[in-house]
Length: 489
Image (cartoon, rainbow, N blue to C red; front, side, top):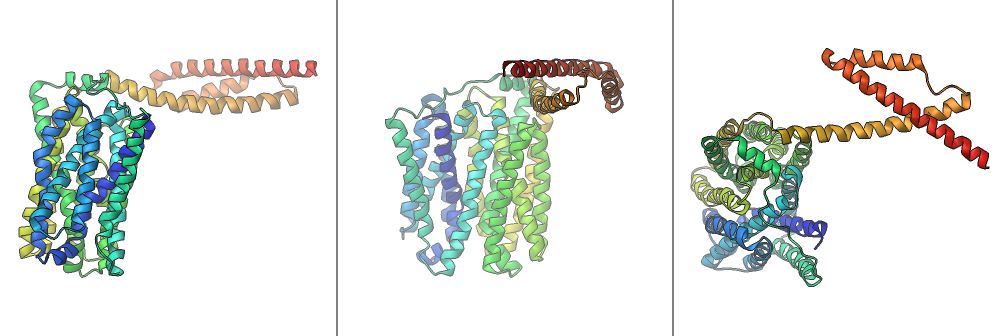
């Protein structure tokens, strides 16, 4: 499959994965009624997803380094399909717990095969991996609206599960078609690019271990802070602040909108060469502030703004940014690193529902506000990683910045030459000479006036003299070409 076609299928998987992440929490009350169990029991079933991740991530990550990525993408899709179809109709709690474990395995298989694939496809700065979060967020945004509509219409909650299953089936057909046509080509695994090797070489062994501890810990907190919010925000808003059910679901949808917006902004910032460590620290501080507002403000409008900001900062791709940074430390074992990182996330998936399920028996607000402690821990983890990874700017990083600046310069020079063409035509009409010495002197004086560094000024003037000299040559060539066309006519 061509890279673009393969990317579309991988992204579509993560739209479904976004649904899978919250489909149990969004149907907690319906499942509790269907199983005739309290919410705490439903929360314990949800913890099975964490169990599946816990046992699968490290194993599947290592196996993907050995056997390639495609097989694990297919395993993830098949496992998710069984989960959605089974959970829609299951009545036995033990079977439901087993299906939740299978969903965790599906999550592990997809991550082991997909994140590594995008890096090996050559996504600059890991930006392709950040876009995965956008598709996950799209699923997380649409599902609460669907669930709220099903509740309002008093329809079967299982339709939300069936929708995800149908999308997976369609995507599976596309992938199978790619295999039959011999187009499904995954990139060579575990290629180490020069940028990643440069980062690794600049960091001492001891500091690399500190960064590993910080990033692995962030694998836990980044997942935990999102799981807790998505699991409890709706119940918290209705029971603590007495918001309507629609508004409570809307707080989750706003979180998803913020998440999608955050992905786009982080994608843009990474493309501009902004350091991952700076993004991680800034976003985590912002998410803690937004969470404080959500947990203690009874004002609906303020809560909505904070939910949007929390999604932007906590779920806007920062987890993927940290993973990309982690992989740079160990570029030759991408699958293993991915497995380790998400293993800590799976521990969060397992422990957070258990902890908050126990806290909710005392007070739902207590369960929700536990997220503040997780936010503080997350800041500590990224702060440790940023401190350990700090290093002098590398040659490859500076060259990337120059490449970006050069792109802007070329675009502006193209615009300048378009304007030079228009000026040349006006000069021909008015029978003026190509060279305007006074105009060129004024340009050089403007360059000197606008230069922020005096030492740069003579070099900038020399560059502009070359630009103007080539502009005159371009105008002259256009004028000669125009004369030849006239003589030919």
